[in-house]
Length: 114
Image (cartoon, rainbow, N blue to C red; front, side, top):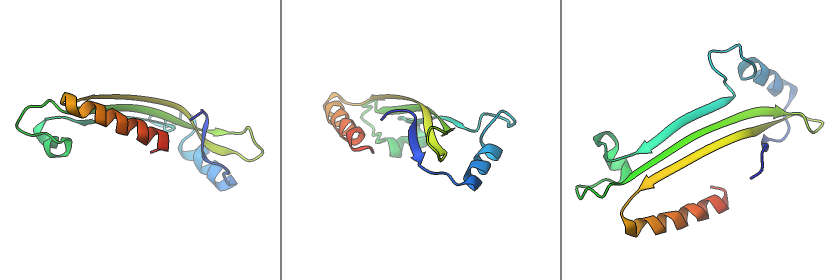
Protein backbone atom coordinates (compact mmCIF):
# COMPACT_ATOMS: atom_id res chain seq x y z
CA UNK A 1 0.00 0.00 0.00
CA UNK A 2 1.36 3.37 -1.00
CA UNK A 3 0.43 6.67 0.60
CA UNK A 4 -1.58 8.68 -0.02
CA UNK A 5 -4.01 5.77 -0.31
CA UNK A 6 -7.38 6.61 -1.89
CA UNK A 7 -10.41 5.97 0.30
CA UNK A 8 -13.02 7.72 -1.85
CA UNK A 9 -11.89 8.35 -5.45
CA UNK A 10 -14.25 11.21 -6.33
CA UNK A 11 -15.77 13.56 -3.80
CA UNK A 12 -18.78 15.66 -4.64
CA UNK A 13 -18.71 19.39 -3.85
CA UNK A 14 -21.04 18.67 -0.91
CA UNK A 15 -18.65 16.07 0.48
CA UNK A 16 -15.73 18.50 0.18
CA UNK A 17 -17.75 21.15 2.03
CA UNK A 18 -18.59 18.63 4.78
CA UNK A 19 -14.90 17.74 5.09
CA UNK A 20 -13.91 21.40 5.34
CA UNK A 21 -16.57 22.13 7.98
CA UNK A 22 -16.16 19.09 10.20
CA UNK A 23 -12.66 17.66 9.75
CA UNK A 24 -10.21 20.19 8.29
CA UNK A 25 -8.35 22.95 10.07
CA UNK A 26 -7.60 23.62 13.71
CA UNK A 27 -10.88 25.20 14.74
CA UNK A 28 -11.87 22.08 16.69
CA UNK A 29 -11.02 20.65 20.11
CA UNK A 30 -8.56 18.26 18.42
CA UNK A 31 -7.39 17.49 14.88
CA UNK A 32 -10.39 15.56 13.57
CA UNK A 33 -8.54 14.24 10.53
CA UNK A 34 -6.38 12.14 12.89
CA UNK A 35 -7.53 9.01 14.70
CA UNK A 36 -5.40 7.31 17.35
CA UNK A 37 -6.10 4.50 19.74
CA UNK A 38 -4.97 1.39 21.53
CA UNK A 39 -6.68 -1.96 21.31
CA UNK A 40 -5.63 -4.56 23.82
CA UNK A 41 -6.48 -8.04 24.91
CA UNK A 42 -4.78 -9.33 28.01
CA UNK A 43 -5.38 -11.73 30.85
CA UNK A 44 -7.08 -8.95 32.77
CA UNK A 45 -10.42 -10.23 34.11
CA UNK A 46 -12.24 -7.44 32.25
CA UNK A 47 -11.45 -9.00 28.87
CA UNK A 48 -10.18 -12.49 29.76
CA UNK A 49 -12.83 -14.31 27.74
CA UNK A 50 -12.17 -12.26 24.59
CA UNK A 51 -8.41 -12.65 24.88
CA UNK A 52 -8.47 -16.43 25.06
CA UNK A 53 -7.10 -16.49 28.59
CA UNK A 54 -7.41 -19.61 30.69
CA UNK A 55 -6.16 -20.70 34.10
CA UNK A 56 -2.85 -22.13 32.84
CA UNK A 57 -1.24 -18.63 32.89
CA UNK A 58 0.03 -18.95 29.33
CA UNK A 59 0.59 -15.19 29.17
CA UNK A 60 -1.53 -14.35 26.13
CA UNK A 61 -1.59 -10.68 25.26
CA UNK A 62 -2.30 -8.64 22.13
CA UNK A 63 -1.79 -4.92 21.86
CA UNK A 64 -2.33 -2.77 18.78
CA UNK A 65 -1.47 0.93 18.79
CA UNK A 66 -2.63 2.79 15.71
CA UNK A 67 -2.63 6.31 14.38
CA UNK A 68 -3.86 7.38 10.99
CA UNK A 69 -4.63 10.62 9.23
CA UNK A 70 -6.94 11.44 6.36
CA UNK A 71 -6.85 14.39 4.00
CA UNK A 72 -8.07 15.71 0.69
CA UNK A 73 -5.92 15.16 -2.39
CA UNK A 74 -6.25 17.56 -5.31
CA UNK A 75 -3.72 15.80 -7.58
CA UNK A 76 -6.50 14.84 -9.99
CA UNK A 77 -9.22 17.07 -11.44
CA UNK A 78 -11.71 15.80 -8.86
CA UNK A 79 -10.73 15.90 -5.17
CA UNK A 80 -10.49 12.58 -3.36
CA UNK A 81 -10.33 11.49 0.26
CA UNK A 82 -7.03 9.78 1.02
CA UNK A 83 -5.24 8.12 3.90
CA UNK A 84 -2.17 10.35 4.22
CA UNK A 85 -0.36 8.83 7.19
CA UNK A 86 -0.44 5.50 8.98
CA UNK A 87 1.32 4.16 12.07
CA UNK A 88 0.65 0.64 13.30
CA UNK A 89 2.36 -1.19 16.18
CA UNK A 90 1.43 -4.76 17.03
CA UNK A 91 2.72 -6.70 20.03
CA UNK A 92 1.64 -10.10 21.28
CA UNK A 93 2.70 -12.90 23.58
CA UNK A 94 1.44 -16.46 23.53
CA UNK A 95 2.64 -20.01 24.03
CA UNK A 96 5.52 -20.77 21.66
CA UNK A 97 3.49 -23.34 19.72
CA UNK A 98 0.92 -20.68 18.75
CA UNK A 99 3.28 -17.87 17.69
CA UNK A 100 4.37 -19.34 14.34
CA UNK A 101 0.82 -20.15 13.32
CA UNK A 102 -0.37 -16.69 14.34
CA UNK A 103 2.40 -14.93 12.37
CA UNK A 104 1.68 -17.03 9.28
CA UNK A 105 -1.99 -16.10 9.51
CA UNK A 106 -1.16 -12.44 10.06
CA UNK A 107 1.11 -12.37 7.00
CA UNK A 108 -1.64 -13.96 4.90
CA UNK A 109 -4.29 -11.53 6.14
CA UNK A 110 -2.08 -8.54 5.36
CA UNK A 111 -1.26 -9.90 1.89
CA UNK A 112 -4.99 -10.30 1.20
CA UNK A 113 -5.70 -6.75 2.34
CA UNK A 114 -7.66 -7.73 5.43
